[in-house]
Length: 357
Image (cartoon, rainbow, N blue to C red):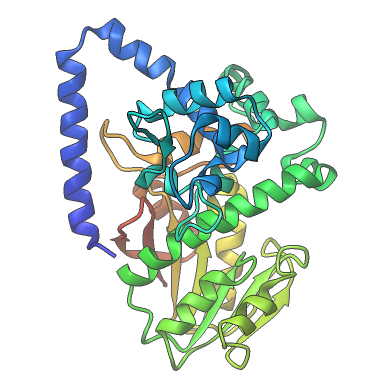
């Protein structure tokens, strides 16, 4: 895992190159690239859905060979991969065969850091339809789910099992994508009792316990969310140090932990509900304990950051938001916490460390 500082330097260099590119190109050309960026994303979703990266795992193949294996048309496959190869996703050789690139390899089902499910959900037909109502969300400042679906997003997922499965797989992949950067950036070794609030399947707790050999931990979430958490802990050899509790963090959380974790939780909620969650943790946390919030903290300035687009997704779907450091500080202060520091990671996520006051 590269140091977070090195990653930030590379990001600044990339931003400088991008800005230089914009200055060198006529504005209409650059704007056309931005307008058509959604087409690239959609093309990636199609290759992910077809499983093309898996077909190429053992070597290059012709469009005809790929099409036969994935149930598609050879000409369509050729045109799809030709377009993506121009963006570094797949590579065509002189004989017309296509091969994986490092980018395309992340779409393999067995990739070390798989992005296939994330690509499939981000551009699923239902999700594209939600984004078509961005104008309404911007005008009203409210999520569009009730208007579009008649129910909130979570009820919609419950009624659409196939999409819910894609979503859950995407969230699991995103969670696994963040495990190594978070545990590499933050020192969990002094922790003795961890409560992973909204911890879902328990992958984050398992990663923390592996870094904190003296610690015990609890995964706390809704009963439907923690259904596989015991299996996760058992598979990691941590069943003796990790347990699972079901409940709603909007009502209460397990008491007595010296470390409470909220990873990718508060961005799902408006400020009022976040304040309630934080106050519940404030009542439960042990004296001298710490609260860790892992989120996409939006930086100041005009530089690119994934949190800025994710923030629009939160607006559309749940009425939540990605927040700046100052916004997080305000919420923590109101709930009886002091924001001690913000720890960057090699991923876009940061760890906000707070203590009770």
